[in-house]
Amino acid sequence: MSVVYESQRYIDEYLLFHFGRPEQILKWPGGPREALDFPVRTVSHFSASFVDRSLDVGCAVGRSAFELSRHSREVVGIDFSQAFIESAKRISREKCLKVRCLEEGACYREDEVELPKGVNVDGVIFEVGDAMNLREDLGMFDRVHAANLVCRLPEPQRFLERLDRLVRPGGELVLATPCTWLEEFTKQENWPPGQTLKWLQNHLSSQFELKDVVDEPFLIRESSRKFQWTVSMVTRWKRNEPTVGGEVS
Image (tube, helix red, strand yellow):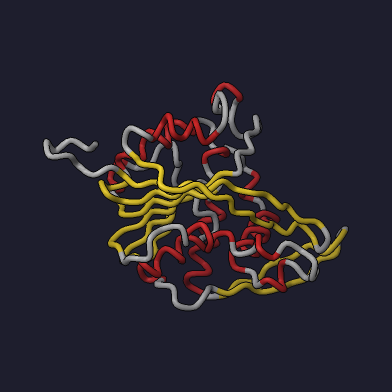
């Protein structure tokens, strides 16, 4: 797994990406504001009902896990990056964190991001973990969320093979991926042989029903004048219910 996400630069960028206000991220009036609040928008694809347990795999600095807590009694957020998990825990405790934002060259400004109001911090647990080798005692969840994760895993099929033991029958799964397969993260032999959507369907259709496919843009600020604008494919799935004979259809 890449160590790039352990650097202070990426911590600050992701804290701003997850918790920054629109004016902190994008001061340009003609910019793509519809790409802001991506961690909120991916969670919005779940149904609105209240559930017992939710899981956010690849939670980064935690915004989606906090958003899941609005409609879940318990949320577990897992990420491979120790630095990201420590940042998620810190903003949970301290409610606001200082970030160092690159303006240009060697010029930075200090800013502050805040935990959103109305989230249930007491119901959210963060831990370091490997999406390809999640601990066996995690149990099952009503909702599993994994945003921009699968195309950053060395062996993404190992994560997909675990999903039927994470999502309870009748539960929901939201996977988001920009389909940006790179050898820096995943050897080409482990890329989908064709389109990512077809690959996901081949791996999941025996246990999950595909309910929806939508596109969600996202924007990551690198400096005051440079941004990453990317479009993620968001798929929503429902775990098959048991049939009369007790088997999961």
